[in-house]
Length: 174
Ligand SMILES: [Zn+2]
Image (cartoon, rainbow, N blue to C red; front, side, top):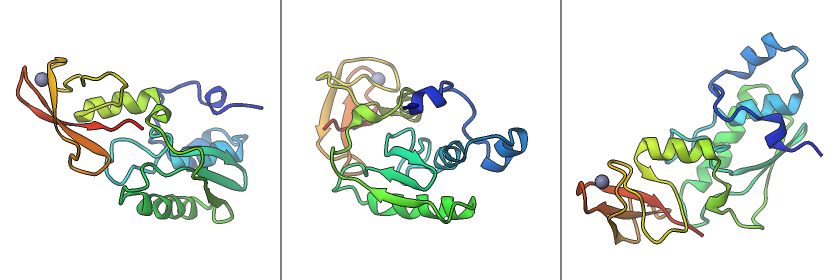
């Protein structure tokens, strides 16, 4: 079995290239690679700097089927994600590709890719971690405190840095 990691060794490659650009340079591109590149262009509805691939929402891609696992079930964005993926696939000519939603095993923040964590950090959201303290995305201090279990969305908690006093969101761990 060819893993996604094996087909996508370049985490840092430019993911903004459209499928058409990729296909024009590489006519032999596999169909499922084309689907991956479409999915990599679908932003998370709440955090547009990361794609649904970055967040680990896309679990598997086959030539006729995309398997997704939504993030937190209480998250309003989950209803939007499948619709956005459908629209992106249709626009790229993949109308015949089905979207299958799988709820088990449940999505976990562990599925966020390294590049996804880097993008979240650059966006000012502390990436999820099992550490009890969050690292401030502004100044890097670990002298931080949780202010509220609920940040700007139910998926995130509101934290504050005691060093630079800036508030920030932190992804909750499951
Ligand atoms: Zn700080």
